Image (cartoon, rainbow, N blue to C red; front, top):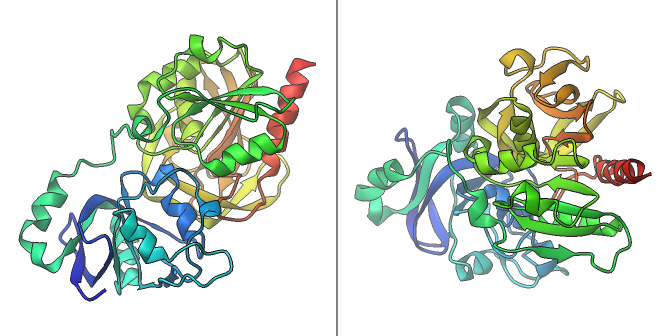
Length: 376
Protein backbone atom coordinates (compact mmCIF):
# COMPACT_ATOMS: atom_id res chain seq x y z
CA UNK A 1 0.00 0.00 0.00
CA UNK A 2 2.89 2.35 -0.75
CA UNK A 3 1.74 3.72 -4.12
CA UNK A 4 0.22 7.16 -3.98
CA UNK A 5 -3.26 7.53 -5.43
CA UNK A 6 -6.32 9.74 -5.31
CA UNK A 7 -10.06 9.84 -5.81
CA UNK A 8 -11.17 12.40 -8.39
CA UNK A 9 -14.79 13.54 -8.74
CA UNK A 10 -16.33 15.08 -11.83
CA UNK A 11 -16.50 18.51 -10.18
CA UNK A 12 -12.72 18.47 -9.72
CA UNK A 13 -12.68 17.59 -6.01
CA UNK A 14 -9.64 15.40 -5.22
CA UNK A 15 -8.97 13.21 -2.18
CA UNK A 16 -5.50 11.73 -1.65
CA UNK A 17 -4.74 8.20 -0.45
CA UNK A 18 -2.73 5.02 -0.91
CA UNK A 19 -3.63 2.45 -3.54
CA UNK A 20 -4.47 -1.09 -2.46
CA UNK A 21 -6.28 -4.01 -4.05
CA UNK A 22 -5.74 -4.10 -7.82
CA UNK A 23 -3.42 -1.40 -9.12
CA UNK A 24 -5.52 -0.39 -12.13
CA UNK A 25 -7.87 2.60 -11.94
CA UNK A 26 -11.65 2.56 -11.98
CA UNK A 27 -14.47 4.97 -12.77
CA UNK A 28 -18.17 4.96 -11.99
CA UNK A 29 -20.73 6.73 -9.84
CA UNK A 30 -19.08 7.48 -6.49
CA UNK A 31 -21.49 6.64 -3.65
CA UNK A 32 -21.24 5.84 0.06
CA UNK A 33 -22.70 3.37 2.53
CA UNK A 34 -23.19 4.03 6.23
CA UNK A 35 -23.08 0.33 7.15
CA UNK A 36 -20.60 -0.42 9.94
CA UNK A 37 -19.99 -3.99 8.75
CA UNK A 38 -20.91 -6.33 5.93
CA UNK A 39 -18.31 -4.97 3.54
CA UNK A 40 -18.10 -8.23 1.61
CA UNK A 41 -21.87 -8.48 1.26
CA UNK A 42 -21.95 -4.90 0.02
CA UNK A 43 -19.38 -5.24 -2.74
CA UNK A 44 -20.96 -8.48 -4.01
CA UNK A 45 -24.47 -6.96 -4.08
CA UNK A 46 -25.40 -6.56 -7.79
CA UNK A 47 -27.22 -3.33 -6.90
CA UNK A 48 -23.77 -1.68 -6.61
CA UNK A 49 -22.87 -2.40 -10.25
CA UNK A 50 -21.37 0.61 -11.98
CA UNK A 51 -20.40 2.31 -8.73
CA UNK A 52 -17.28 3.17 -6.75
CA UNK A 53 -18.21 2.47 -3.13
CA UNK A 54 -17.02 4.61 -0.23
CA UNK A 55 -17.29 3.15 3.29
CA UNK A 56 -18.07 5.59 6.07
CA UNK A 57 -16.95 3.00 8.67
CA UNK A 58 -13.28 3.85 9.35
CA UNK A 59 -11.93 0.27 9.57
CA UNK A 60 -12.76 -2.06 6.69
CA UNK A 61 -11.49 -5.62 6.29
CA UNK A 62 -10.80 -6.42 9.93
CA UNK A 63 -12.56 -9.81 9.86
CA UNK A 64 -11.46 -10.95 6.41
CA UNK A 65 -13.69 -12.49 3.76
CA UNK A 66 -15.43 -15.85 3.47
CA UNK A 67 -17.40 -17.81 0.93
CA UNK A 68 -20.57 -17.77 2.99
CA UNK A 69 -20.72 -13.95 2.97
CA UNK A 70 -21.11 -13.71 -0.81
CA UNK A 71 -24.32 -12.10 -2.09
CA UNK A 72 -23.62 -13.16 -5.68
CA UNK A 73 -20.94 -14.99 -7.63
CA UNK A 74 -18.58 -12.00 -7.89
CA UNK A 75 -17.75 -8.44 -6.87
CA UNK A 76 -19.92 -5.87 -8.63
CA UNK A 77 -18.49 -2.54 -7.44
CA UNK A 78 -15.92 -0.93 -9.69
CA UNK A 79 -13.77 0.31 -6.85
CA UNK A 80 -13.54 0.64 -3.06
CA UNK A 81 -12.65 3.75 -1.05
CA UNK A 82 -11.65 3.43 2.65
CA UNK A 83 -10.19 5.35 5.55
CA UNK A 84 -8.21 2.46 7.06
CA UNK A 85 -8.08 -0.82 5.14
CA UNK A 86 -7.19 -4.05 6.96
CA UNK A 87 -5.99 -7.30 5.42
CA UNK A 88 -6.46 -9.55 8.46
CA UNK A 89 -7.29 -13.19 7.77
CA UNK A 90 -7.16 -14.65 11.29
CA UNK A 91 -10.85 -14.22 12.18
CA UNK A 92 -12.57 -17.58 12.85
CA UNK A 93 -14.77 -17.24 9.76
CA UNK A 94 -12.13 -15.83 7.37
CA UNK A 95 -10.98 -17.68 4.29
CA UNK A 96 -8.54 -14.95 3.22
CA UNK A 97 -7.68 -11.29 3.68
CA UNK A 98 -9.90 -8.51 2.35
CA UNK A 99 -7.20 -6.76 0.33
CA UNK A 100 -5.80 -10.03 -1.01
CA UNK A 101 -9.30 -10.87 -2.22
CA UNK A 102 -9.81 -7.48 -3.86
CA UNK A 103 -6.47 -7.78 -5.63
CA UNK A 104 -7.19 -11.34 -6.81
CA UNK A 105 -10.57 -10.12 -8.07
CA UNK A 106 -8.88 -7.21 -9.90
CA UNK A 107 -10.87 -4.59 -8.02
CA UNK A 108 -9.10 -1.22 -7.53
CA UNK A 109 -9.15 0.15 -3.99
CA UNK A 110 -7.68 3.04 -2.05
CA UNK A 111 -7.09 3.60 1.66
CA UNK A 112 -5.95 6.46 3.90
CA UNK A 113 -8.58 8.68 2.26
CA UNK A 114 -10.36 11.35 4.30
CA UNK A 115 -13.67 9.56 3.78
CA UNK A 116 -15.44 11.95 6.16
CA UNK A 117 -14.62 14.86 3.88
CA UNK A 118 -15.50 12.84 0.77
CA UNK A 119 -18.87 11.76 2.14
CA UNK A 120 -19.72 15.29 3.32
CA UNK A 121 -18.93 16.48 -0.21
CA UNK A 122 -21.27 13.87 -1.75
CA UNK A 123 -24.01 14.64 0.77
CA UNK A 124 -23.79 18.33 -0.08
CA UNK A 125 -23.50 18.08 -3.87
CA UNK A 126 -24.89 14.61 -4.62
CA UNK A 127 -23.45 11.36 -5.91
CA UNK A 128 -21.39 11.99 -9.03
CA UNK A 129 -19.02 10.37 -11.45
CA UNK A 130 -15.48 9.79 -10.28
CA UNK A 131 -12.68 7.30 -10.07
CA UNK A 132 -9.62 5.92 -8.30
CA UNK A 133 -6.31 6.78 -9.94
CA UNK A 134 -2.60 6.38 -9.40
CA UNK A 135 -0.68 9.60 -8.85
CA UNK A 136 1.08 9.01 -12.17
CA UNK A 137 -2.26 9.08 -14.00
CA UNK A 138 -3.21 12.61 -12.91
CA UNK A 139 -2.99 14.06 -16.42
CA UNK A 140 -5.65 11.74 -17.85
CA UNK A 141 -7.89 11.33 -14.82
CA UNK A 142 -10.29 14.20 -15.52
CA UNK A 143 -10.89 13.09 -19.12
CA UNK A 144 -11.48 9.50 -17.98
CA UNK A 145 -14.10 10.62 -15.48
CA UNK A 146 -15.76 12.89 -18.02
CA UNK A 147 -16.06 10.00 -20.48
CA UNK A 148 -18.02 7.89 -17.96
CA UNK A 149 -21.79 8.05 -18.64
CA UNK A 150 -23.98 9.26 -15.76
CA UNK A 151 -26.13 6.75 -13.88
CA UNK A 152 -29.32 8.33 -15.23
CA UNK A 153 -30.52 6.26 -18.16
CA UNK A 154 -28.23 3.29 -17.56
CA UNK A 155 -29.60 -0.24 -17.96
CA UNK A 156 -27.25 -2.30 -15.79
CA UNK A 157 -29.72 -5.07 -14.93
CA UNK A 158 -28.95 -7.00 -18.10
CA UNK A 159 -25.25 -7.02 -17.17
CA UNK A 160 -25.75 -8.58 -13.73
CA UNK A 161 -28.80 -10.80 -14.25
CA UNK A 162 -28.78 -14.42 -15.53
CA UNK A 163 -28.90 -15.27 -19.22
CA UNK A 164 -31.12 -18.31 -18.72
CA UNK A 165 -33.62 -19.73 -16.25
CA UNK A 166 -32.19 -20.80 -12.87
CA UNK A 167 -34.22 -22.87 -10.39
CA UNK A 168 -33.87 -22.91 -6.60
CA UNK A 169 -35.73 -24.97 -4.04
CA UNK A 170 -36.86 -27.64 -6.48
CA UNK A 171 -37.27 -30.11 -3.61
CA UNK A 172 -39.61 -27.74 -1.77
CA UNK A 173 -43.35 -28.33 -1.69
CA UNK A 174 -44.37 -24.70 -1.25
CA UNK A 175 -45.63 -22.22 -3.83
CA UNK A 176 -43.84 -21.70 -7.11
CA UNK A 177 -42.64 -18.14 -7.54
CA UNK A 178 -41.36 -16.73 -10.82
CA UNK A 179 -38.80 -13.97 -10.26
CA UNK A 180 -37.65 -11.33 -12.71
CA UNK A 181 -33.93 -11.40 -11.91
CA UNK A 182 -32.56 -7.89 -12.34
CA UNK A 183 -29.70 -8.64 -9.92
CA UNK A 184 -31.13 -10.69 -7.07
CA UNK A 185 -29.07 -11.22 -3.89
CA UNK A 186 -28.43 -14.68 -2.52
CA UNK A 187 -29.89 -13.58 0.81
CA UNK A 188 -33.22 -13.01 -0.92
CA UNK A 189 -33.04 -16.39 -2.61
CA UNK A 190 -32.28 -18.03 0.74
CA UNK A 191 -35.10 -16.24 2.57
CA UNK A 192 -37.64 -17.44 0.02
CA UNK A 193 -36.32 -20.97 -0.25
CA UNK A 194 -36.22 -21.31 3.55
CA UNK A 195 -39.95 -20.62 3.51
CA UNK A 196 -40.60 -23.55 1.18
CA UNK A 197 -40.76 -21.55 -2.05
CA UNK A 198 -39.85 -23.11 -5.39
CA UNK A 199 -38.07 -20.15 -6.95
CA UNK A 200 -37.51 -19.72 -10.68
CA UNK A 201 -35.11 -16.90 -11.63
CA UNK A 202 -35.85 -15.58 -15.12
CA UNK A 203 -33.59 -13.27 -17.14
CA UNK A 204 -34.77 -9.68 -16.93
CA UNK A 205 -35.68 -9.67 -20.65
CA UNK A 206 -38.32 -12.38 -20.08
CA UNK A 207 -41.73 -11.69 -21.59
CA UNK A 208 -44.94 -11.78 -19.58
CA UNK A 209 -46.03 -14.81 -21.58
CA UNK A 210 -42.88 -16.76 -20.74
CA UNK A 211 -43.00 -15.64 -17.12
CA UNK A 212 -46.52 -17.05 -16.79
CA UNK A 213 -45.99 -20.10 -19.00
CA UNK A 214 -45.51 -22.52 -16.07
CA UNK A 215 -48.48 -21.01 -14.21
CA UNK A 216 -46.52 -19.80 -11.16
CA UNK A 217 -48.37 -18.98 -7.96
CA UNK A 218 -46.82 -15.51 -7.74
CA UNK A 219 -44.27 -13.16 -9.30
CA UNK A 220 -41.33 -11.62 -7.44
CA UNK A 221 -39.53 -8.49 -8.63
CA UNK A 222 -35.92 -8.39 -7.42
CA UNK A 223 -33.41 -5.71 -6.51
CA UNK A 224 -30.81 -4.54 -8.98
CA UNK A 225 -28.69 -1.64 -10.28
CA UNK A 226 -29.22 1.30 -12.57
CA UNK A 227 -32.06 3.58 -13.53
CA UNK A 228 -35.57 2.02 -13.48
CA UNK A 229 -36.60 4.41 -16.26
CA UNK A 230 -34.13 2.60 -18.56
CA UNK A 231 -35.91 -0.75 -18.15
CA UNK A 232 -38.97 -0.20 -20.31
CA UNK A 233 -39.01 -3.87 -21.37
CA UNK A 234 -39.19 -5.08 -17.77
CA UNK A 235 -41.94 -2.55 -17.03
CA UNK A 236 -43.95 -3.89 -19.95
CA UNK A 237 -43.51 -7.45 -18.65
CA UNK A 238 -44.78 -6.40 -15.23
CA UNK A 239 -47.81 -4.75 -16.83
CA UNK A 240 -48.54 -8.11 -18.41
CA UNK A 241 -48.67 -9.95 -15.07
CA UNK A 242 -50.32 -7.39 -12.78
CA UNK A 243 -53.80 -8.56 -11.91
CA UNK A 244 -53.05 -12.11 -13.04
CA UNK A 245 -50.74 -13.20 -10.21
CA UNK A 246 -49.82 -11.80 -6.78
CA UNK A 247 -46.77 -9.56 -7.15
CA UNK A 248 -44.15 -8.55 -4.58
CA UNK A 249 -41.31 -6.18 -5.46
CA UNK A 250 -38.35 -4.89 -3.45
CA UNK A 251 -35.82 -2.14 -4.18
CA UNK A 252 -35.50 -1.87 -7.99
CA UNK A 253 -38.47 -4.25 -8.23
CA UNK A 254 -40.51 -1.74 -6.21
CA UNK A 255 -39.55 1.05 -8.60
CA UNK A 256 -40.27 -1.04 -11.70
CA UNK A 257 -43.65 -2.15 -10.37
CA UNK A 258 -44.56 1.45 -9.66
CA UNK A 259 -43.57 2.49 -13.17
CA UNK A 260 -45.74 -0.35 -14.49
CA UNK A 261 -48.61 1.17 -12.50
CA UNK A 262 -48.01 4.47 -14.29
CA UNK A 263 -46.14 6.22 -11.48
CA UNK A 264 -42.91 8.20 -11.81
CA UNK A 265 -39.41 7.64 -10.41
CA UNK A 266 -36.64 10.16 -9.79
CA UNK A 267 -32.97 10.16 -8.83
CA UNK A 268 -32.14 10.86 -5.19
CA UNK A 269 -29.33 13.34 -4.49
CA UNK A 270 -27.04 10.76 -2.86
CA UNK A 271 -29.27 7.71 -2.46
CA UNK A 272 -30.06 5.47 0.49
CA UNK A 273 -27.23 3.06 1.24
CA UNK A 274 -26.70 1.58 4.68
CA UNK A 275 -28.29 -0.57 7.36
CA UNK A 276 -29.68 2.06 9.70
CA UNK A 277 -32.57 3.67 7.80
CA UNK A 278 -35.75 4.13 9.87
CA UNK A 279 -38.96 3.29 8.02
CA UNK A 280 -42.46 3.66 9.43
CA UNK A 281 -44.95 0.90 8.61
CA UNK A 282 -48.18 2.86 8.28
CA UNK A 283 -50.22 -0.32 8.60
CA UNK A 284 -49.02 -1.02 12.13
CA UNK A 285 -47.46 2.25 13.28
CA UNK A 286 -44.19 0.42 14.00
CA UNK A 287 -40.79 1.80 13.04
CA UNK A 288 -38.29 -0.65 11.59
CA UNK A 289 -34.58 -0.15 11.05
CA UNK A 290 -33.89 -1.25 7.50
CA UNK A 291 -31.13 -2.13 5.07
CA UNK A 292 -31.15 -0.04 1.88
CA UNK A 293 -29.18 0.26 -1.34
CA UNK A 294 -30.69 2.40 -4.07
CA UNK A 295 -30.22 5.69 -5.84
CA UNK A 296 -33.73 6.23 -7.23
CA UNK A 297 -37.15 6.56 -5.61
CA UNK A 298 -40.86 6.68 -6.45
CA UNK A 299 -42.61 10.04 -6.59
CA UNK A 300 -45.37 10.70 -4.08
CA UNK A 301 -49.00 11.21 -5.17
CA UNK A 302 -49.23 14.41 -7.17
CA UNK A 303 -45.60 14.08 -8.27
CA UNK A 304 -43.98 15.45 -5.12
CA UNK A 305 -40.69 14.05 -3.88
CA UNK A 306 -41.74 13.86 -0.22
CA UNK A 307 -44.66 12.43 1.73
CA UNK A 308 -45.59 15.01 4.33
CA UNK A 309 -48.04 12.84 6.28
CA UNK A 310 -48.11 9.53 8.09
CA UNK A 311 -51.55 8.79 6.70
CA UNK A 312 -51.94 5.98 4.11
CA UNK A 313 -52.49 8.30 1.16
CA UNK A 314 -53.43 6.83 -2.21
CA UNK A 315 -52.52 6.97 -5.87
CA UNK A 316 -54.91 6.28 -8.72
CA UNK A 317 -52.96 4.03 -11.07
CA UNK A 318 -53.45 2.19 -14.35
CA UNK A 319 -54.37 -0.88 -12.27
CA UNK A 320 -56.66 0.72 -9.71
CA UNK A 321 -55.88 2.27 -6.34
CA UNK A 322 -52.54 1.94 -4.55
CA UNK A 323 -52.05 2.89 -0.90
CA UNK A 324 -48.88 4.13 0.78
CA UNK A 325 -47.74 1.50 3.28
CA UNK A 326 -44.25 2.66 4.33
CA UNK A 327 -42.44 6.00 4.55
CA UNK A 328 -38.77 6.84 5.12
CA UNK A 329 -38.31 8.87 8.30
CA UNK A 330 -35.01 10.39 7.11
CA UNK A 331 -36.28 12.22 4.05
CA UNK A 332 -40.01 11.33 3.86
CA UNK A 333 -39.67 9.41 0.59
CA UNK A 334 -41.98 6.58 -0.46
CA UNK A 335 -40.81 3.24 0.97
CA UNK A 336 -43.65 0.93 0.00
CA UNK A 337 -47.19 0.60 -1.22
CA UNK A 338 -50.05 -1.89 -1.33
CA UNK A 339 -52.19 -2.44 -4.41
CA UNK A 340 -55.88 -2.41 -3.52
CA UNK A 341 -57.57 -3.61 -6.71
CA UNK A 342 -55.06 -6.23 -7.86
CA UNK A 343 -52.92 -8.45 -5.59
CA UNK A 344 -49.55 -6.88 -5.00
CA UNK A 345 -47.25 -4.90 -2.74
CA UNK A 346 -43.79 -3.37 -2.81
CA UNK A 347 -41.10 -2.04 -0.48
CA UNK A 348 -38.11 0.13 -1.35
CA UNK A 349 -35.72 -1.42 1.17
CA UNK A 350 -34.09 -4.85 1.63
CA UNK A 351 -36.04 -7.03 4.08
CA UNK A 352 -33.51 -9.86 3.69
CA UNK A 353 -30.90 -7.59 5.31
CA UNK A 354 -27.67 -8.98 3.93
CA UNK A 355 -26.09 -7.17 5.74
CA UNK A 356 -28.28 -5.40 8.26
CA UNK A 357 -31.01 -5.75 10.88
CA UNK A 358 -33.70 -8.41 10.57
CA UNK A 359 -36.63 -6.15 11.49
CA UNK A 360 -38.37 -6.55 8.13
CA UNK A 361 -37.90 -10.23 7.32
CA UNK A 362 -41.54 -10.78 8.26
CA UNK A 363 -42.38 -9.33 4.82
CA UNK A 364 -41.30 -12.62 3.24
CA UNK A 365 -43.72 -14.44 5.55
CA UNK A 366 -46.48 -12.04 4.53
CA UNK A 367 -45.70 -12.65 0.84
CA UNK A 368 -45.97 -16.43 1.23
CA UNK A 369 -49.17 -16.06 3.28
CA UNK A 370 -50.72 -13.91 0.53
CA UNK A 371 -49.87 -16.57 -2.05
CA UNK A 372 -51.61 -19.24 0.02
CA UNK A 373 -54.68 -17.02 0.49
CA UNK A 374 -54.85 -16.27 -3.23
CA UNK A 375 -54.77 -20.01 -4.01
CA UNK A 376 -57.44 -20.90 -1.41
